[in-house]
Picture 1 (cartoon, rainbow, N blue to C red):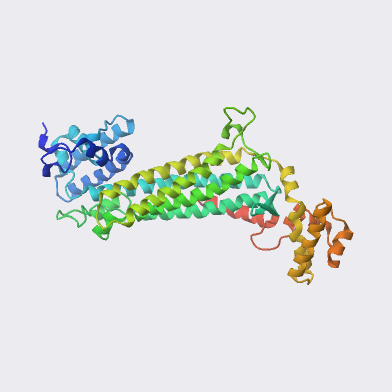
Picture 2: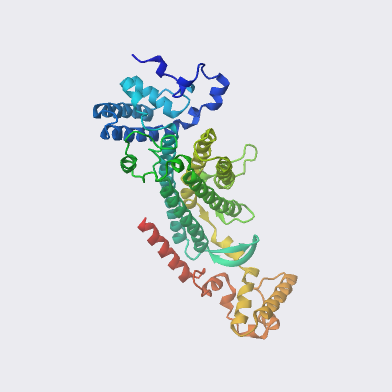
Length: 463
């Protein structure tokens, strides 16, 4: 039989009245922090074992607590756990159910800890696992980029600056540029995981505990570092900011990729056709095939930036120690992790199943996009680059007035622009000749792109 005086809020002994319903609604985190339950229980089991080892409670009591927590965890995983608003938060709910399972020994579980270090630990564990899961999704997206880049060897695409055709590129070079961005994202999530890999348990409310606890052994059991400063341990949310920053930066990268594919799949560009499984239609226009997956990659980046900004603003005015404001740290983290997971779940197959149209891309990559080749050809023959730039610019203007491209310009027109162009090899004045003419490190030349592909494949095989 349980003592009613020990039921209800963990802090109820100080108060002579129960919380008002309106206050209960705003104060409770149980509607969203239930997803921390597995981490809360994992931390509680490690804490219970430590209490038994240290003689704070008997080893038999510790074993009974662990047994009960395992039963509660199984209920959570089966979706059978009953959550109520009266529980206030996930910690109270777990302790309430644990007491129903093992009796009053559950009241000893909270010895030597506070909800302050408890919730901080839960969030550390969640962020650590989230970073691992996002990292796995990132690697799959990077594999898809490399697969498509390898499949599309030799395919030419126009490169753009200011959304104006600039110079021809190999499509593989373009895709591998996104690979490099995701590789940097991967490192950010690895850093976020490392930052989350620190246990605050043992800090208690903020100043530690008089009980002979062993925070280092708890941290070791959880595969984490022990706390160094108890006040910092309960105040720190930098690890959450690191995860949100990594999510926001990844969101920006996915938004840029998504924007390109929205353009490329339009009739105006016509560079790629998206698979029907990753497109949607219109409720009124039967002909429509919309790139919604890529538009959502573009759209969700705003939420990710907002999630990061939300936590930054919450933290900026807080003194050290726990303040109820920190209850607001969880929803932006959950939202960002869920949004990133949704994007990474769809991205790899949108890449793998897309159909490119090389003829359309090659046609767009020619024309005046080859002007820089002429200027560089002249500069290589001792013509000052500014003089070469002016001569080719005038040639472009004359070709535009005649309605012809540089590829269609006659030998006489080239020589009239500058005498040195009389010896120009005409194959240079083609998209394939342009990319093949590049010599610099990390360029879009076929040999350079092949080396980039090899390095990308080696990187992925090392992961």
